[in-house]
Structure formats: structure tokens, C-alpha cells
Image 1 (tube, rainbow, N blue to C red):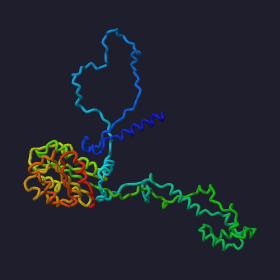
Image 2: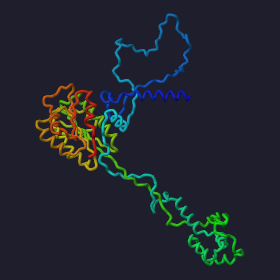
Image 3: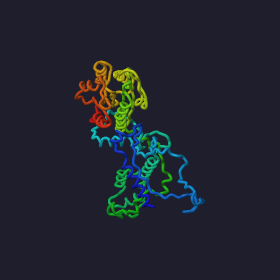
Image 4: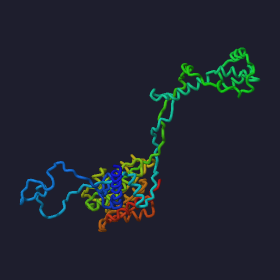
Length: 426
């Protein structure tokens, strides 16, 4: 059985090691909200037992010459031999965003500083702190009992030891009384005098060290019946307050949904933006995602609409930046949130909008990273597709602004690397 289990673990490990390459998955895999990478599964050999027990080998009711039933389901094929169009069943390797971010760092050599802007979050830790009041269920009984024991031991008087002390050479009532006060023993001088009057053997020890160990006793067990608890010793356990630096980020994805943004362009946009969403989710403690669509005007949409929607209007990119400046960014103050603003389109924009409106807004809006992704499948550049050129000319050499061009799936990873590399804390 142990060998079988070992083989099973081995087969599972082989399957995980043969998942689809991360780079190939980003360029060709099926994207979505979750990171599910196809893996090659090696089926374990197994025995099959036929419960029907329909006779043995060579046995049956047929006569010689009867047609043989080949075990089919009775449906006749069309003889074309073509495979079906439906997707087959696959096994997937479920990857969390943290793991994805780590592997993408390794794959692309990204230099990303994920500290970001910090907000102190107070959370409850273990019950290591104490206070003077609280519910009875949190009373520290161990502490209460220890304090009572220490007080009892301090107040207990070992009279036998005091009597033996009076038998040490040079230890009279005055010397013993001095020793008692130095050791905070609760006994009166008159008691010591009473002990001294009862001693018949005046000198038994040459020094205090000669007193036998048997006279140095702990309080007897019967004395603990009188142990007293005091309210001043009551303390209550409370959870420790921990100040945890929390990294916050908001990722605002903007997409041109005008008539020129057809299916191939939309797919390239998704292949760039989706892995960046996963990556940033793995880098920050708390991430919000906002999706903004625009043609000549802008509006907020959900994720599914963002990658699929198409309208017939014109293109005015600045409308999206006006929307996020007025309605979205006030919810994410710059001193507490990292802001990632990623826009994508085919490079077209309303005449003079890029220079007169878009560029001033991008300069005015504070962000950890501004990016514009220009998609032109098969390098078929539109006549008026000049947004990328204008932004490159304006922001050349400024680290917070990145412009990436994607003509095919092979350009996707280069675009992601260009946009995310060297992101630093502001």
C-alpha cells in the first residue's frame, strides 16, 4: 500500500510539473477572474471489474453466422471522421495571485517594490495584554493564585527556624530581630523574646550556615486552607493590539469601446490587462479594481462588460480621465492608496483631445503608474492612430508614464514587462 501511495504522489507531482508554461498561458490560455492553468494529467493504471458477470470467455447465446455486436451505442456516424467542436474536459492547476506574481517576477525579471503607501490597521492578536477590568471569562486565574501564594509564603512564619536561629553563637534577641526585619518576616520582637526565654540550649551552632536543612521549611499544606485572594491582584487578559502596515492599491482599467475596437483588439487588451490585475492583486494586501469604458463619453462597467462591450460612437479618451478624477479617485486618497491607471485603445482619439485634454489630465492626476496600451493587430495601423506617438513624445523619460504597443500575442509579455517594471514607492 505504501508503494501505491508513493506512486500516486509521484504521478500527481509529474502532472503539476507539466502544467502549461506561464508565458504560453498568458499569450494563448483562457483568461478570466481566476488563474486556472491547464496541466497534463497522467492517468494511473487501474483494474476494471465487470459487475455484470455476463458469462465467461467464449460463452454466449449467439449461433455461428450471427452479426457481432461491437458494443456501440447504436448511433451511426456520418463517416466524416471530423472531431467534435465542443471542448473536452481538462485538469487545471489553480494558482493564487501571490504565486502568480512571484512566478511572473521570475519569468520577466520584474523589479517591483510592493511597499507602496501604508495605512496602519489595528487588528487583534493573541491574548498577551492585560487590563484591570474585563469579563469574568478572561480573568487570569493563574496570576491571581500565584500572587496569593507569594503573599501567603511571605506572611508565613517558620517559628522553628527562628528558635534555632537563637541558638547560633552571638545571636541574641537583638541580632535575630535585626535579621527578621532584613528578611521581611512578619513576627514581633516580643515573640522572639518569648522564644528566647524558652531555650535551654543557648549555643548549638557556630554560624547560621550550620542550621540543618530540615528547619528551612515551606509553609505546611494545612496552612493553605487560609490562603486569601485580593481584588488588587485581579487582572484580565485582553487581545494584543498590533499595528500592521497594510498596502493598498486601486487598479483603474480604461478601454476604448468605440466601433473600431473589434474582437481581435479586445482580445489583445484582455491579454495585457488581466495578467496585470492578477499580478497586482498578488503584490498588495488590499486591491480594488475599477473598470471604465468610453467612446465619446465614459461610464463605469463590470469586468465582463469591460472586455466584451462595443459601441458605435466616436472616441474621446479624456472623458474617462475626467470621470475617474471626479467620481473615483476621491474614494482613494493619494496619501493612502497606490493608484494604477491603465488605458487601452487602438490609438484613435478625437482631434486635438490628446494634446489639449488627455495629457494635461494625466499630468494632473497623481498615480503610481500611468500606462497606455495601443493595440493594432497585424500592424494595420489606422490613419488617425497617433495617441501612442503623442504620449511618448510628451512623457519621454518620465518613469511614471509607460506606452506599450501590441500588434499580436507575441507582444503581450513585452508590454506587461514594460508597464510593470521598476514600479517604486512614491
